[in-house]
Length: 471
Image (tube, rainbow, N blue to C red; front, side, top):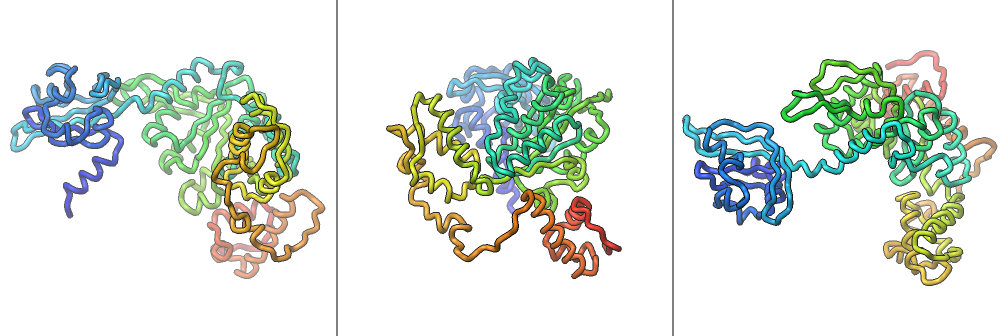
């Protein structure tokens, strides 16, 4: 196995910059991330002295040259400088001497670009400054009135929000991308008695796992080099609501630590000894069904049961097309104001397209399509030619499975809410599977194509009474 090749692949595919110099201070290795920090290409860096690449540095300010001079490592050094493109860069570096047979032959530096986290740090500062001041919290934009639609699924969502708002129980919201999960979360917060307290949202997929832990729980002085006493999101959200989006992207060990905080209501900063009691309403969201997240090992089973005390499943737009007219009119009014237009309507051809289209991007896609159409329209009516280019030439028969299939559909007697009909049908299917497999949970779950723990959950949720189960 070619270990040098493997190390080269690894070095060129990590976010940290890696500099290696020989004992004379000339660069012998330099990866792509270091290129981004320094602003000098690999070809122009290798073979050159460090001070040629960074003319503003000196033998005293360059950590690599200092290590070559002293033979001692420098851990956790923070350095700001202007690179060759005159861009200001701030790095957190660890610089180590390299010895061979007791002789100093060079030095290696691993540097993290701290500018990557600048936007997040600014956001945390604003949260600290605005904690508990609702009127200045720019994070909160939506209320229950922001949920547009009169369809039965949307009426049910609004009713659930009102019922769940003043409970402190965790809520799990599921729905495809673009269905409006954060809008629902903010509506729950604004309708609750926590509305004058902090609302903090964090996308778990947007932050590296090593940083996410310190963001959630905070840090204490000495927990790692350069660390400070800093409150985490749990402390900042005390008394209010913490929204964790894409919870299924959080790695399993961190999920276990999060579970402990949720169960105990206590948080301890990384490296700290003091335990702090917090009162935080946890709301989580996923864009995949919970049973799929469990099956794929992206969500701990115990975490799911703890977070899914209350749940809201947001319908995709294709299942609530009766809301299209009111949504389209709402977005036209919004963008008329923004673009100083006076669009009155959408013509029949474009409206027919909207009704037949499958809307994989849901409300977000509809919103952006109307924004584009209002901007492009040259009169007071939206036409097909005003829509985004990617809609032109779409064969709806191939795009939309329901349209492609012209077979007669089974007629249902619709005498109660859709969810009750679905729950009853699901209950019948599960009972049939259990009976076929003589109440063996494992075999029934396999027949249904779901994890055994999901089947347990559904049996309890749907109140299925069975004489005896076989695991």
